[in-house]
Image 1 (cartoon, rainbow, N blue to C red):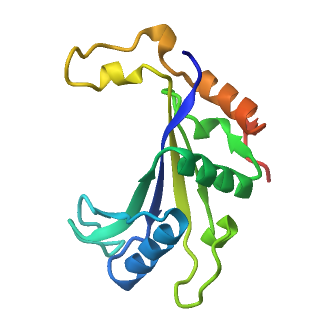
Image 2 (image 1 turned 60 degrees about the vertical axis):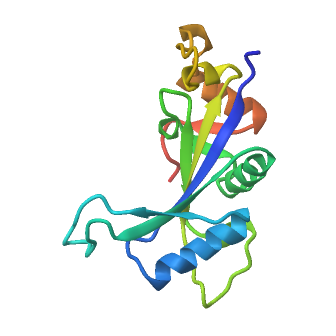
Length: 169
């Protein structure tokens, strides 16, 4: 009842501009996951970056189930199963980024280009639904909540990963 599992994996690809570059990044995400990505808009105008409010600047896709485990494993293989301690949040989630999507096993296409992306992993224990459901909603007790140390231990046992205190030079 206390085993930890992956609730969802969110892959975000922020291009910083709308147009053809963003649609190519969305095509890369679709090749990777087989799902149609959702576009995200800029919250406010930043003149130095050349973006306007409500302009589509990134795309993301949420993956659950076995496919999430498979893609997470491919992403961690790129990072050589090494993460920093600061990659883990206090609520037991973690994230990391990769520089080039071709490292994930996608064939390089010169017309598409190369895009980096961020992986965000949300972990949960069975019974977490009681805090989210509409009827008879209640809180998850403190012993059942996920902590940073729980997530780190899960990562080290599940993937035989290494957690570093500082980045390697």
